Length: 109
Image (cartoon, rainbow, N blue to C red; front, side):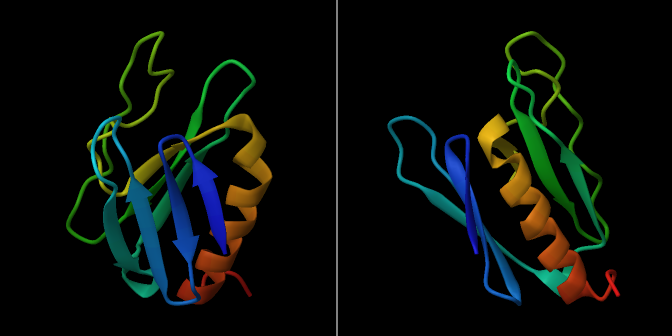
């Protein structure tokens, strides 16, 4: 399953989460996480005015702080490898993706 975000995408194959980020003018960068290594997820749904985000928390790492400002809309910085901004149209797909990830982690019955 793959969901398109803002300047990137998140894919999940049942075991691995792959976050692909692309800055304007640069080659895409890929970050891979095993679903069982994730200790938590953060999801802020997008509105029609502001992008939301999804973020994965790993053991021994703190969740990235949300940037405050009109242009960022309360999202983690683009440099955070474990998060991705999402547009409003991707809210439902991200919700399903997170459910599948939580199921693989053994959180959902």
